[in-house]
Length: 355
Image (cartoon, rainbow, N blue to C red; front, side, top):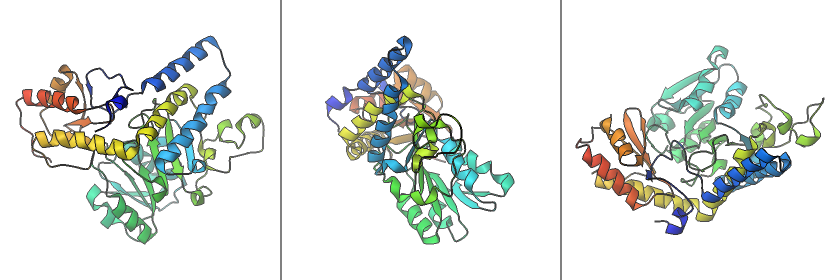
């Protein structure tokens, strides 16, 4: 388990087991965010002071993801990044995706149907075997939002490479607790507000350099220029030569709040966070008579009143697909597991068979 000093960076009320919905900010990150808000309130600084945090966050995310900062674009949410790839697909392209995939991944792809882009949906576990010579792209989440299943990353990557298919991976439910090298895939997209503990309104995309000429920016603004403040008016188009060409104009205060969170994850180490998070999740599973898993997320097929009882007992969790979803991160410890168990046992309902 992680040192108690790590948990001391946070201020949860009760047992917060809902990082799969949104993560909690470290105190230093929240203090930086509120200080920036106060600077905005009083007009104490120019935007260039806040803008420097975008570059710092980009660099910290790149280190966590094992990527080069030049291959990282900064955005606000995931779906516009997926939309860039979807819009660049040629007519007749074939995309494979999991059947229960999160809609921020699926919808931009499905919206290309009028152009003849076909999206085939299969079970997550069948994805590697479904990739064949007809597959152009494989799009999936590294960790499923619905139930926390970790995708067979090695098998999917190997099958895609064998058949010459490109890979698009949503790492929103993975980066921050699951060691994952983004360079193994052609494109990754990540919302920063969950396991990376950023404010909502921060997102990241990594894109292989060889794809950049095939994927034009959909809505470049001043921030997509090589030197943004030197390209505020008039032509010609002066796109950044690297992934910054996909940047959108940042909501600065969110990026101020992102840096300390990312740097804390770096200091603690993703592998250590992974071991801590999965150990807590497996402790809960063991006490409920379930098999261990490789995920920080526990999805329980329990009665609906269980979620209400958890909340009444000060345990924050979420409901997805008729199940209760609990997510463990670096501000949790064994006491949170026990509080969740007490609430679940008090419902006096047995686990339903997984469907």
